[in-house]
Structure formats: C-alpha cells, structure tokens
Length: 327
Image (cartoon, rainbow, N blue to C red; front, side):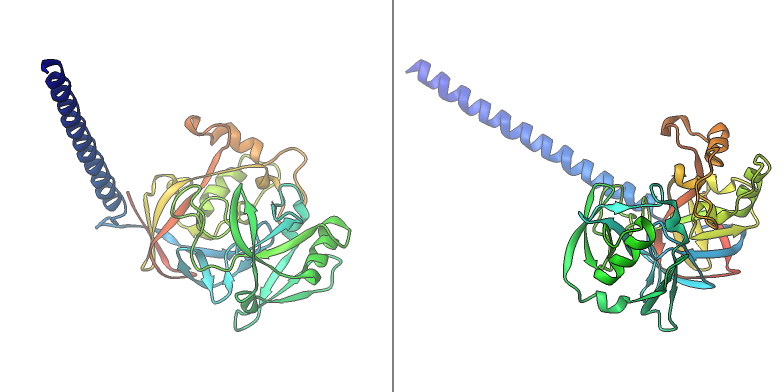
C-alpha cells in the first residue's frame, strides 16, 4: 500500500512538475513572441527626423527578369515593387521547359530584349536584334490558367504566355524554335518567403534597389572601361550624396514614399554584362575591381554595391523628387 501511494504521489508530482515546466515554457515562448513583435514594430517605425541627401535622377523598371529596362519619369510603389497598371518590375521571367528560371548570367544577350508598354500600360511589345516585334496582352494574362514556375529554388504561381511568345524567345536566345518559355506572375502580393517579407514578385532579393551616381563615378576612377549605373540594374538612382553614402542609410524617403533598408546588394557575374552590347566582359570587370575594395567579410566573396529596400509607406516616385535618409 505504501509503495502504491509513493508511486501515485511520485506520478502526481511528476505531472505537476511537467505542468509547471510546460507553463514556464509557454510563458517564455509568449514573452519571446511578444518581444519579437515589439522589436519588429520598433524596427519598422520611421525616424522622426530626416536629412536631405539629394534627388531622384533616374527610375528604371524591368518587366522581364534579366531583360532590358523601361526608363520612366514616375512610378507607383507597392509591396510587390515599382508598378503602373500592368507595367511592373520583374513580373515576367524566361524559363526552360520545366519552368525553371533562366537569367542573363547564362545568356547575356537577354539584356538586349527591349520591352515597351502602350499608353494604357496594358500591352507590352518586345523587340530584340534580328527579331520582328511581338506584342503581349498583359492584362489578359490575369485570367489565364496558372502553372508553377521556379525561381531560386522557390515554387511560384505563374501563367504561361503562349507558344508564339515561347517560340520568339527560343529563337532569339537559343536559335531554335523551342526550349524556352515566358512566364507571368499574376498575383498582387508576394508568394515568396525565402528571404523576408520584402521579397517581391520574381526579384532576386527585394522589391526595390537604390543606387547613387557618385558611387559609380568613384568606381569609374578605378576602371579602364567606364560603366553606367544601368550596369547594376537599380530601380532608383540618386544624385547628390557622396560616394557610398547609401551604405549608412537605414531609412529612405523619396517624396512622401518611405522605404526601409533591408540589406546590401551583393554583386555577381551579372555585373560584368554590358547592357548596351549584351556581352560579358572577358576580363571580369567591373566585378573583379569591386572585389578588391567592396567586400564585407561577414558576407563572403561577393562585393556590396547599392542597397536593397523594402516599402513601408506606399506612394509615387518621380524624377527630381527629393531623397531623404534616416539612420
């Protein structure tokens, strides 16, 4: 009898202890979650004071990942990226027949594919050297059947742009009538969670990238063959601040549109592709030079050049808008 009571008491004590431990763990977990959201709210609260850095000098939108840009005088800003009606940043991507994305890293001549939109920003016409133009009704794709595509290992919903468009891309890039297809991202918000909440539609990292004219001018003092800001595929180019000043901006306000710094833009071999010629520099420039003075030890071998941003207050950005920063 005594032994049975001891067993029951021990079992009860163990259960009580387990409940206390569970309660403790629950309290700790709840506290941790609460602390996370408090920190997140603080981190995403814009500063009260801003310092003027300069003004917007250029605005670029790249409708097709790895293809040519459209230069605009103003653009709206959403969580998905720069957009005006159906003109949206990295809303299309070239894929192989299995749906895996293809970039100019492998096929540099992709940068010579030039998109243009009609006045209503609903239809996109593409041109490329040696090719007849082809037009895509982008708005109609919103109602098309969805099939998965793959970008940086992530599965994303896409709409195929059809056999005629696929033949056009295959002929230009591969020299055959099949092999590549064009896919469209149909959602108004990101479905990707690989890096953070600021990952856009089909972008590599975030939905916005900002660059400084003085930064590329400083790089050019180190190069025999000069480059332009477009070689680094920014969305916003700022004129006014000294070289590399953007490295220290933790908040950016353009007009009344507010962005949060997310991470430095780490550069790869894409940087070596001449946007006007569609060929990669045989000497590995300017990436080779950047590696000599712009590497961040904690981030590996890729040099940092420009900054990735995430939207915190939606609005429009226009040429000449004042640019402010906060720390």
